[in-house]
Image (tube, rainbow, N blue to C red; front, top):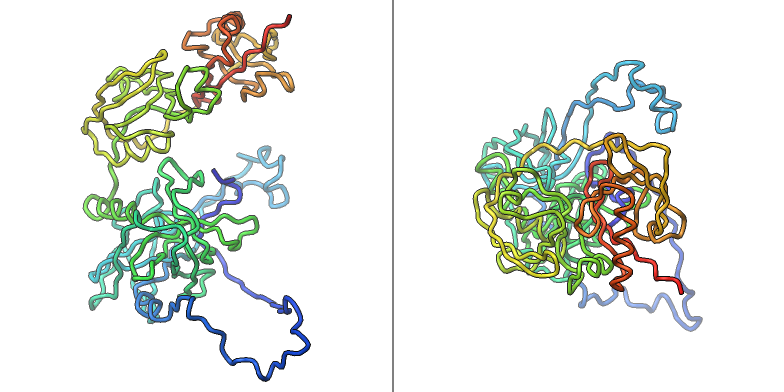
Length: 479
């Protein structure tokens, strides 16, 4: 997963100012015997693609999206000199943050001659006013048909006096790493711009959400390109440009596009219903590394480990429990939580799914009737602690919280607990699937695992309301 700090959406621009000074120097001097006047006027390019015809064919369907939205500055009551500093929270509530109008620019493309346009949700999903600027300079107001924040897609509609130039989707499942692509969009508000490159990777997870499955391309994508298309050499849209990875805000050759096959499904739902209704299993999951696999006696470090089960949710009703590892869904292997999220998200509510899972050292199967993904997120729980530590043999300082819970008061440096990833404030819930009622329960579980010559125990914690499984290494017995 990429560092979110350096991964930015390639869209909304508040203001545009561009200036560049380019200095060219030769990589090496010409050989002394070379006569520049005798050099050929053109370098042979028969092995390189020419995108001129493709650009001319697809560019009329690519549009600029200009939006106006209302925002409230979260630091609106903080004096400018203290914004972004540790002192900012002291000013919260001292004044009233006033809503203000902001303008932004992005890109989009026409998929139907009647005026349907695809763009990113972060470009137009919350806009009050939307204007679409076409390649010939004409401008039309647009209404939002629907949006899906989870995949960062939105569908717009303009009422055009005549059929519009449009483009079609290709099959992104057939896209190969290394193939040539053309990106078209509106970087920095400059208007229609084309850049070329290759597909650098497939199925990238950049931490944007549970359905991450991006194509990575090295064609130059910058702020304002968001919502624009990436084409294959046949002129089919294979992706929607949505983000870049950049340490400085500019293109460094790491752009990310939503695959066309994902876009097609979402756009069809938006066009028909205005939103996307996804199936829901009612579990929170995490990946399984080699240490956790050993602690759970799993044959391989694969699957989606259930850290939380929503009460009265589909999984709970079917009998799945915290600590189960989901191995497959309808016969298709689940390698990690992202696999599970995408496969469940592709289903509809009330669909039935056959789940193979791992529990207590053996495989089992269960059938789950999926529900509808709720919009709200659960509130984070606050973990209490006091100042009466109880040292454990794995570098944990434990304490009893105000509601009787066992809480990590401190973690010793270079200890097994630190290596496991435990942190101060973690609430310890279970060890090896047994409820923790007191600090001694952890010590007893570690001692039992040592006697069984196991390398780790599986410990379940809650961290600021988020369920998490960790593999706590078992110290070897001293002779």
